[in-house]
Length: 382
Image 1: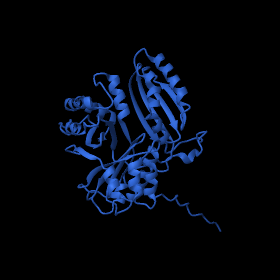
Image 2: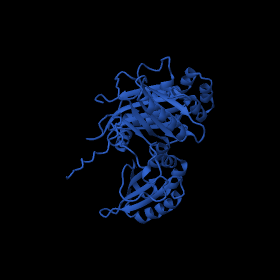
Image 3: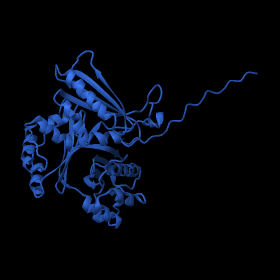
Image 4: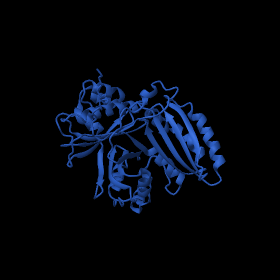
């Protein structure tokens, strides 16, 4: 008697949340791709500058390897790829003054650059040698996007000028939202906390193209010129190097975003500033990210969207909240709903904010963290 085996069942598919989510805290390896356009005739100078940079980068914690390639069709086009153990050590380095110093020799020979960052999701061949987790350091599942890129800039103004600067920044004509056939400005939200300014933007399409588009608009240029006398870091917008250095230091990248699976067009937008103790910015941002991931699954949570921006010890959490921030239970909107999280957060915060949490005074902590809204503008067809 002959028997036939039943066909093997396909492996179970993990049921993943369909909510929008992005994060640098997956623990997976990072691939960085830098597209470079070199001035004609400067190829040898660029190669020498790269080799010097390569030797220095090799000692940066978290760096695994890099590779330099030159186009076979256009010798002025180069490609640099690097691999990192995970995103946080790369971001710590790329946002540092050390990085600004390292790349300075490239400025005189490079016409344009574009940086792209990717988590490694799948690969063929052997696990990368030298990585502790091997294949386990791949991103386990793909995240669901909404086609939006979120980015922010932050800078400080001279103490005493805050009211004047806020008026200048709120009183301007919005630039044309359409950048090109594929890129649009969706929303700009501008907040102040003391003398710190944070401008968060949402772009659909190419972020770099959108930033360049905005910089060319006469109404935006007029505002930037008007606040120049009040900036703590001097800049000359007519000097490309001065402007580039200012905006390099002002970049405040999004390190985490989550959108709950519920929507409310009437949700209010708020920003909270979490000043970290020296060297604790990335850990603080990761703690808030973990809380926001958990809160997104909680139907009680008033927070419908949360984006965490972090650079060095500056951490800003931009949230869209149902019914505002005047609820009796402040733990969820403050990102400390789980037991013990307030204590963990206090350990990472600067003194005044930490004291309010340690005393259990959440209204006081909210008062300290809450940023003043200067302007929040959506594109008409967003």
